[in-house]
Length: 303
Image 1 (cartoon, rainbow, N blue to C red):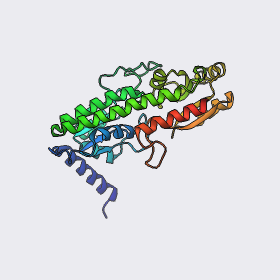
Image 2 (image 1 turned 135 degrees about the horizontal axis):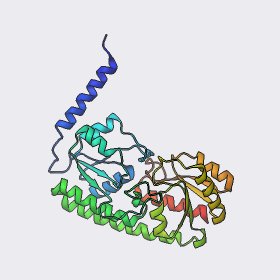
Image 3 (image 1 turned 180 degrees about the vertical axis):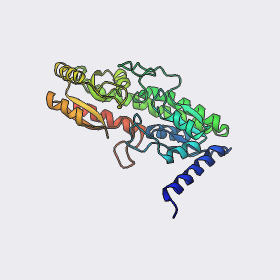
Image 4 (image 1 turned 90 degrees about the horizontal axis):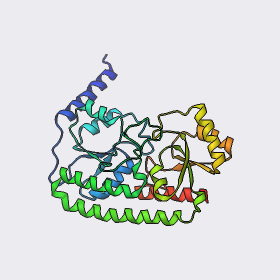
C-alpha cells in the first residue's frame, strides 16, 4: 500500500518546483499578469488603481491577523507563481521574506509605504516603526502612487489606465479625509481619547486630534503580551484620564480588554476593522468603507 500523505507531499513539492522554476511572463495586455496583495485592504486599494485591466489577488484571508500569520502551502504556491507582490512593508509582513526565500520567487515587490516616514514604535521593540500608516488616508495617497508606479513598471502598456485610476482614487481619498474631519468635529476635544487593544491607531489619532491614552498590548503588533505591571498601569491611566472605551479590531482576542473593562467600567468595542476589511456583505467591504465604519463607531461610542 502507498502512503497517501507522502504522495500528497511529493505532489505539492512538484507544484512548488514548477512554480519557482518557470514563472509565467507578464502579458503585454496586463490580463494574465499575476499580482497578489498581502492584505485585504491593500488588495482593495490596488484594485482601484488596476481597474479592469488586471485582477489583484489577496494572500491573507479576511480577518486574518497579519502580525501572527503563518503562510500555508497554498500561499507559497501563490507567491511563487506571481510576477508582482504588493506589500505594506515596515516589517508588517515579517513572514514574507522567508516565504520568498523558500519558494525561490522572483516577483517584483511593491512596498506601498515607500517614501513615508513611520512613527517610532512606542516600545522601541520594532526598529521599522509603526506600520499602520494606512489609518490616515493622506498616507494612502502615497500608497496609491507607489502601486501605480509599480504596476506601470510591470505592465508599461497600462500606464495611462493606471495613472487615470490612481488620480480618480486619490480624489476619493481626499474626500474621505475631509469627511472624517467633519465627523470628528462633532466630538468635543476632551472626549477624543482612545484606548486600543494594540498600538494600531496612532496615525489616525495624530491626524484627527485624538489622544492615545494607552493600549492593552503596548506594541505595534499583537504577538506581544503585557506584564501585570503594564496592565495595572493602564488601569490607573484609564481611570485618571476619563477614557470611556477600549477599541478592538474585529477578531482580536477580547480577554485582556474585558479584564481591564471590569476594573475600570469602560465599554469594550469589538468591531473595528483596522488590519482587514470585512466580507463583501459586512460593514467594511472596501478600504474607504473600513475607515468610515471605524470613524462612525468611534464617534458614536465616545459622544
